[in-house]
Amino acid sequence: MRPRANIRFLLALALAAALALVVAACGGGDDDGDGGSAATATATTEPAAAGAKLPEKTKATLVLDFLPNAVHAGIYRAVAAGYYADNNIELRIIQPTSTADTLKLIDAGKADFGIADGIDVAGQIDAGRGATAIMAVTQRPLGGIITRKEDGITDPKQLEGQQVGITGVPSDTAILDTIVENAGGDPAKVKKVTIGFNGVQNLENGKVKGFVGFYPADGVQVEQDGTPTNTFKFDEHGGPRYPGLVVFSTEDKIASNAPLMKAFVDATVRGYDDVLADPQQGLTDLLAENKTLKKGITQAQLDAYMPLFKADAPAYGVIESAEIAKLSEFLVAAKLIKQPIAPERFGTNELLPSQ
Image (cartoon, rainbow, N blue to C red; front, side, top):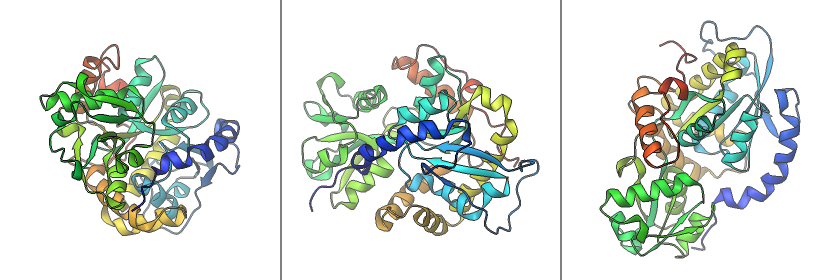
């Protein structure tokens, strides 16, 4: 099979042109331009949580962590079921070109909500910015080292002396070093190669023996392309367990517009609860809202994400303080942040629907 490049890499240039329009259009959430998808109301039998519905229709903007994919199934389920509309939210969904764009747009007040890795949100906080998580999208980190079975790498220590791809962000190096060191290897002996988001293609064509990527997405894509993998998951090989993706906003927005925050979280949690109860309906809604997605690979990726959405948390969306404390300790040791972050500064559960 002819190797296929990672979809994030293939579409990055096209999205770059769109981002310039997004920055201009989504300030304050008052524009209905073409950069996002507006939620529309449909009939639903499930009422909004008490106090979640806004008194009048309100425009809001959500910036994804990247292209729409299986991890966003709950959001598009909430759109299709009319949950945002039920709560009087007219939601616009923006696709950024990179995680950095999501962080910048939220920090600059150009959008209301963003999705990012928990490590990226911690980095924003450490840098003195106002980012604060308002719910967990997944309960486990998504990163890991993905290798080909045919290369015979069954232990991360075997990556010594081999070329391993990283995107170039600091967290990739920390993930790689942690996994190798945990296996008794020497991270300094691994030949790190910066390959951006082209890990899938580089692994499939043999240019690298492994790469740091999101195993429920990138790893599944490699498998779907016909290349069996051995994957070393970060939190199973020395890394902390923490919410791999979170929805975040800023302290100022949370303080100044708590009703909008609560209404958004309520609708989003309802969407993901639906997906947990009926994955096929979630897949159908995701594909209907995103015509370019292919059913086969999206189904496989959703199957991989399903155990990670709630895991053993008491309810969907909960940010567990003990896990944030462990993440903070790890980030300080890895020199990715300068000082520990208190769990209550990292995020809040106060906006979640009462259980």
